[in-house]
Image (tube, rainbow, N blue to C red; front, top):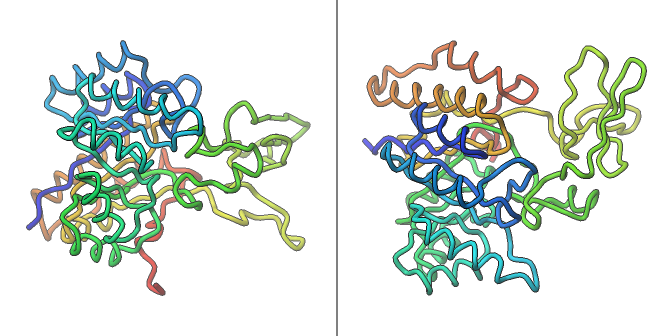
Length: 335
């Protein structure tokens, strides 16, 4: 029997960090208040003071802090990303999550004792890519993109000594983990460059009689009736007119939820399960962390008698996009 996977939870703010720790996270992941992290939204993330307090709080409870510097260094500004690596080491974080190979090289050479994780933004989908990062940069853990089946995840684990982390709950991305052609087309910006998908400065909410329109840099993304909740206008989750039919042409608003396959995730040796959502509220963090903690503890205690409680699903449904859940790529019988 493999060890129970760590529960890695999002911390977009100090209150969210404390909430995650209090609700049972084994580790929290966070970012600086700049474009070196892939959730660079206004009002999110940490300045030096809040980072120091957050790390102190987590460590006082015996939890780990993982710092994401997971966008790609921009031409002419590489020093900004290197300074963030320096700051992360000075702060004493338990691991730095990196995607840019130049930054991986910088961190590995300057701070050989610092634990490094390969970000999902690095898009390593094969054990060959992961083993390369281990050999060249000493990477200790890799976060797998949300495009692999469970069998493919197992194949990766069997062929690498690097710890493997997978996503267990939250929003899905149809693009190549941050390399968003849609956001780049609409706004000229994407998560792996400026750290934000569909940046807020391009968003427009247009209330009209009987409906609400949402636009992204002038592009109509969706139109909601008065009785419909209006979602944030990300291009991949818009409704579009295709050959006379209006529907979610690219992706429906839904959330990944792995509760029912937790025994399989444990069986194949996944080292950590990650909750998506640094841009979400502390209430979201509390609800999801508490539920996943209960499920993991139940799996540890009951083994083969593990079963998904309806109350867990009900709690997660409250914070799921579109009130829908999916196993995503984990369950693709045709692959």
